[in-house]
Image (cartoon, rainbow, N blue to C red; front, side):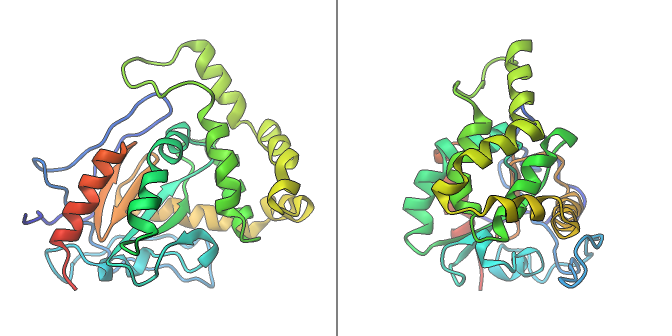
Length: 265
């Protein structure tokens, strides 16, 4: 199907702890992010990212992803030359990111990543101030090559023990428990309790967590997300196609299938 072209910053995305929203901009077809002039100087983390003004083609492609791809292999899984590249903006401080990793990611890994069709790259974006500790924790774990190992624990932790709330707002008690899990002291204590199990050097992790480098990395990822038009997490760009909010596996599978069929190059 032909995809309508979208120039930044016209993406409308809403996703928060108690709200799921997936916004495709026109009809049932997602638009395209113009990344042609979006660049980050890797030597200067935290540099503001600005949108471009022209796209090379009115179709998805892995080439569209080049300016926003993750340089650190520790934050990526899958074949670097896969026909689909997906950059995920997420954090351990986001409950819906937790639900996505718990409910959707296992099949995405089995059916798309492990089969060589999808490269998944993660960037840390705190959708609110309370999510900042989770974003910094993800970036700090990545410096030890332990982002994906820690994700096995931290995304279930932030999601909590309950089912996703698709049909109602969370109660005050549920929100209070969620905010407690987001809080820095509780999150760091939990990470310390499982650090040995995943081979994470906690002392080094804590130093990295508090470092200028990690804060700058999170800021760079966040500025990039804002330049694309994202205001919440989880949010994804697949071969230049943006989509925000929690996606079930069926919806993610449909998205990946359609984008793959429409991709060029």
